[in-house]
Image 1: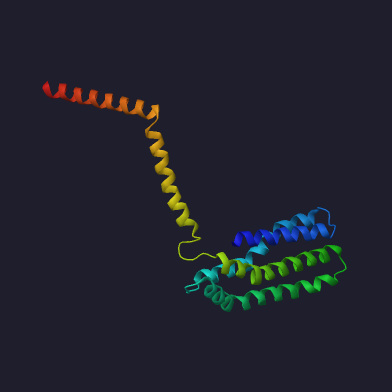
Image 2: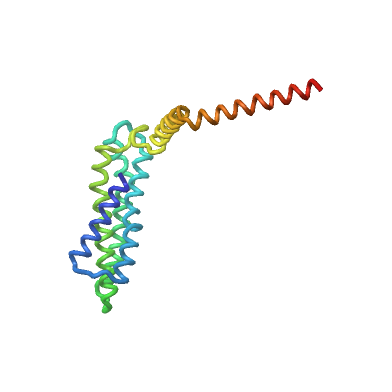
Length: 182
């Protein structure tokens, strides 16, 4: 769910740059790389707070997550936006463009992390083993291996190898008997 939220933030920032009519240049390319890292920050903090919340329902976990982390996320966003504010008055177009990009990215990240992401978690957030990727992969990996082994056992290749192995074993056993007789 975090990845989905981050993807939406990145798409929105890309759409904003297109709406502004910015052509792809060095600054835009750097910003497109930076947006991913900057949009991850708040969602990861909220995810960690949700995972560490000890509650029985999704709604209670979201409430605990917001109580624990919302002020910190909002404070971080406001301090970053405050730092960007002064770049808007720079005489250099590069800094103004970068400030605009930072302002949009931080604003969208904060809005998504404090509104959309909690609503998504309250609706379909992980509970117990539901949503645990490692449990799901482990379960399906065992099934996949089992099915693969069963299919392989019924192939001609497997039967040929088994016959060759049985023939080798009987040859070795015969040689062992001959050596014992001598």
